[in-house]
Amino acid sequence: MSQRYPLSWPRRLACLFFPERCLFCGRVVHPGVLFCALCEEDLPPPPPLRRIGVPGRVPAPTAAVMPYRGRWRRCVLRYKFQGCRSLARQLGWLMAQASAVLPAGGFDAVVYVPLGKKRLREREYDQSQLLARNIGRFLGIPVLDALEKVKSTKTQHELSRTERLHNLDKAFRCKARLEGKRVLLVDDIVTTGATLRECAGELYQAGAAEVCCLCAGVTLPT
Image 1 (cartoon, rainbow, N blue to C red):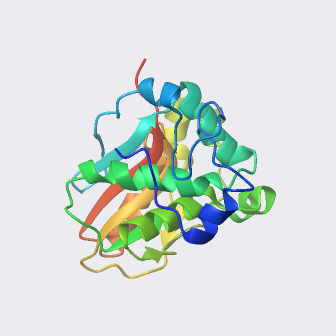
Image 2: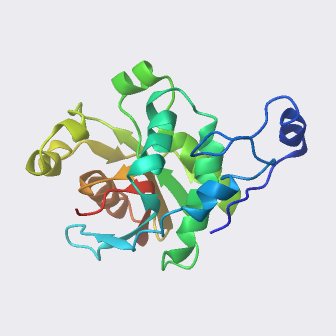
């Protein structure tokens, strides 16, 4: 996985005044560099490919950049909850690189897990949408606004594992036709896989030929 990402010339010029910083420790790094030398030596290995069961379908292969713990967890939480939306560029690049282990051999579209309207008003940006836009740009794949959240749900991390598995039943709807398309489904974090399972099922109902999932972080069994 490449620890450098491509920068446009305007962004390179901006780095003269607002230098790039290591995603983990905050040290100043060269433009396009994601981790300082010390942090790069301590990066965890990529998590194993996970397969999430989708009723009536082949389990969806699911890739992630790193295990959702330690410094990577803090980085993702900064992006998701502390308004650091500019991190979408770096996280999106790492996710695009991580997608190489998925077995589809190329995708026709990127689709993201959307926030509900209330949560979007509170946060002012949809973290998975921004990630998907960057992933699509780096991979050269169109991003489709295909899913919408149609049911208010409780926050997943506040629920037990059993509650999480049913909290999202019928919470999403696909509003696009996806006949024959190989779809890359993007979310920020996967824990039980309930969100991805529900969304993948909707994409298959809309005609998708294959669904693979991609996340920034994955919770591993302890």
